[in-house]
Length: 203
Image 1 (cartoon, one colour):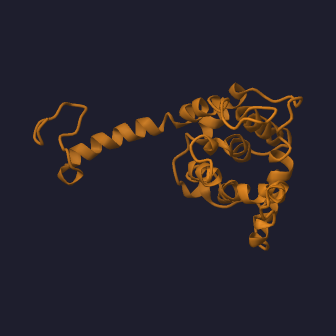
Image 2 (image 1 turned 45 degrees about the horizontal axis):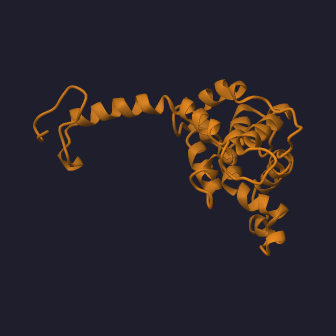
């Protein structure tokens, strides 16, 4: 296709510097349509977390569901429930920075403290095991005094480190589908959505 030819659903350019306003309006429509399906893609990705990280008594999907179930049963709001569900979604593609991966996914759609906790939960979670591997379990001390350090420690203690129990009555993935679609269907980076809220996990 040449720079001047186009069909109704394909841009004319082969280099972005040659794009026209019509080209970018077309791409914007495609991007908005694609973004609208994000919740479904996240659910599909979670559903594939059955093959990652062997050695545990449950799968990564079951761990994610168990964490989200604990959040739900604790009375957490939708932001926390969905964050608990996706907190380890990066294990598949970002095994050494999975916390940042999950936080980046959540950041445009949830409150600031939720994103921060998910971004740092890997450091806080290491308190439970790093010393067994000759590592530093006190990495979380670097955040001492941070306004959200306490809820990050609480997230790990109450919903993460204890969610590897094969006998726990875990809610099924489909029971979280509407919540996932609601959170990831919000306008991205909306100021009233991403503004920080209360520094606690539950009401």
